[in-house]
Length: 147
Image (tube, rainbow, N blue to C red; front, side, top):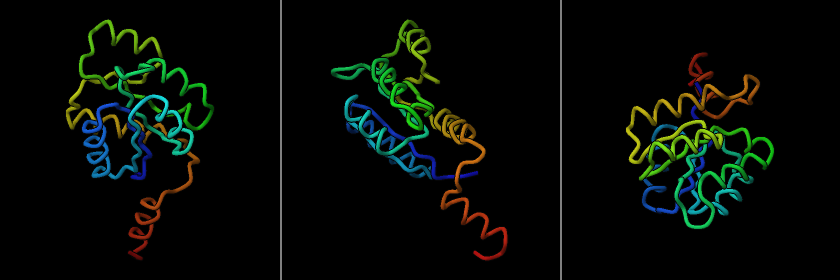
């Protein structure tokens, strides 16, 4: 299983975004962080994430609006798994987010087992022909007795 999953975190709360990024890095992910919707869209174009954690309630465009723009960017950013992240999500907000096209809806703070499941699901969604990552090459070398 490849570790170098590219994960973008878009959250206007710097501490929440930074903490999640650090945790994801300990799980073997490469991370990028943006502190608002417009910055998140620019980062998505450059970083090409495979998984995006997108805060629902941000100043300016909310998470649903940012998701709509993200899906319009074209591949590969538009094909990323996108998780709605919210601290105050209601059942109605969850329904709206699912209808908007989020792949998952999660309330803050994210329990570690939930985070691990989401990361694993994003890894499984990778295309079969995706180029190997550095972690894949190290694993192959170890299997051959070269590492």
